[in-house]
Length: 91
Image 1 (tube, rainbow, N blue to C red):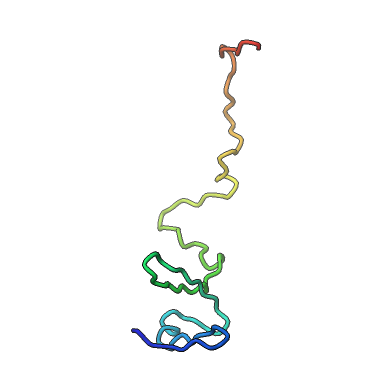
Image 2: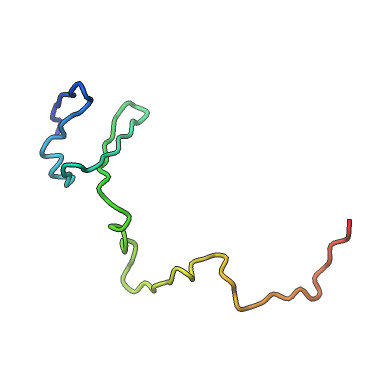
């Protein structure tokens, strides 16, 4: 699949229909271009929104976790005791 296309004076190119169809591209969709160290250019469609990815990491039988429970700084019910702890000497 190596279709040639011509760049206009405005820097626009037409993405061949077969590629548009396979990638699901529509008019107005955004694309990201990356140049690799060997000079290869990679074009990726940016058609996904963050909301489209919701639930993509779930697995069958996986327990659900509330956002509040994900915080590493969440207050715990167990208090640590400072009794018997060595005190720092005063400076």
